[in-house]
Length: 166
Image 1 (cartoon, helix red, strand yellow):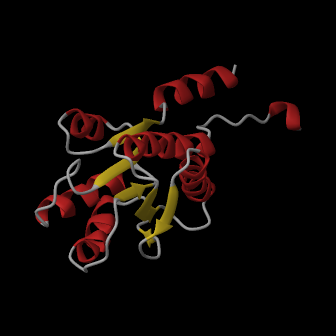
Image 2 (spheres, rainbow, N blue to C red; image 1 turned 180 degrees about the horizontal axis):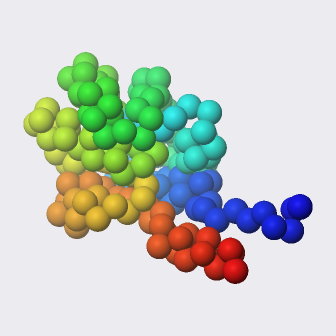
């Protein structure tokens, strides 16, 4: 019965869109209208992966930034060690790109470890965004180690899910 079915979750299109808006504002402030990016995707075929990836690219386009893939997307299944391992060779491959866009903070934090190990600096020669606003990622944004993260309100979602069961 459809009356008893509820969806409680984030709007994945919006999560990606917020990433793109932030990056667009950032690059426009530097006078850039064209960028190259690396995308770290979650699990292929999963709605959140597809929508977050599309949302960020749409926001860049909507805000006047021409975004081009520097390489095929890296698929890291929302896993930090996998993202770290897969991004590492791309940091020293000679491929040029302006930013790394991760579908979640765990993968962004894995990329950050590789960025730091490669001697590169977020905010100076590369920009990095994630989604979830994990405490560690928020601290890295505050410390200047990550460019940005988008809140995925887990407390709000849990509260609404509990309310929906009443």
